[in-house]
Image (cartoon, rainbow, N blue to C red; front, side, top):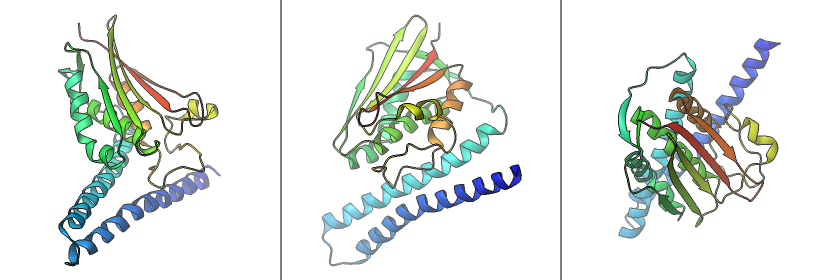
Length: 234
């Protein structure tokens, strides 16, 4: 029975991945046709190129999540720790997510301290935590919404918050939101909601940095807040 259950889970995973790849590939195909049709003006061709860039990034992030889920579950991976200013990592992650955020016309607000916030971390892995949280906020928010990234530095612990005003998380889902392949069940769930491993990757990376991550939502349509707490460098 257990083997059959695992086989069923694998089939569902493959079906979900195939579905998630179909949408961006269809968008890329449509944009490529526009680029190949010389009847379109310069603006239309530029919009088509931008659409291809966004969809390629979407496929790349899906691939990264799948690879990382396997890598992080295979044992305790080695982190390349160094002393970094967390503010710089947040700014870099926001810049990396800018195409998606601009495509959704989101107002992105960064509330960062005026002084350096130094922590010991693997900048690539921790940067992925921030981009995954921003990506998650954009996926589950309506266009023209607001996404706020806040950073607090108190008592030897730094707290990073990503707040959105999107569809929220039902109370019964909060305890499982970081489990692999878990997705919020909503009739308004977007087709680009992913396969449910981005937040699982976030949790694993944060824990490897001796930190914690928690999710809060007052319920459907009330938005979500994800808070990452990490030890400050002393």
